[in-house]
Image (tube, rainbow, N blue to C red):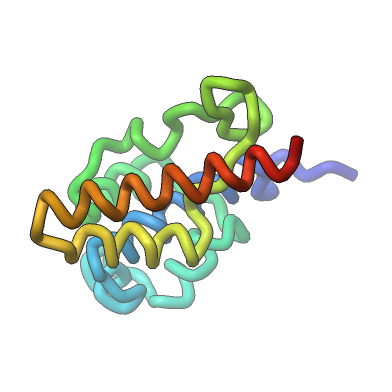
Length: 132
């Protein structure tokens, strides 16, 4: 029997985006839990998509993370898959991506940030060429 209340792909994707944003701004699960008035275990369940996030709670989470609630759903289709302009699914909420975003944000020099971006573009292009 399919439980309509069970978490689904969209719940998991929203949870991943909560985690990515929390890590991006350097906030711990405990800090977010304190702001929301829940346990850090509940935040873990939200982030893993085990527990669904009620709309009012999502609104509170967005406020705590200084972002718009709609941002959690940007680019998602009905299956909870985010697609880029070419139609390829991408994962920008992995732990590695969150770490990369946080480290990149810590670089204060615009010139150095540009060089890092150019490096990543070159690596991505080479990876694409290798698949061909």
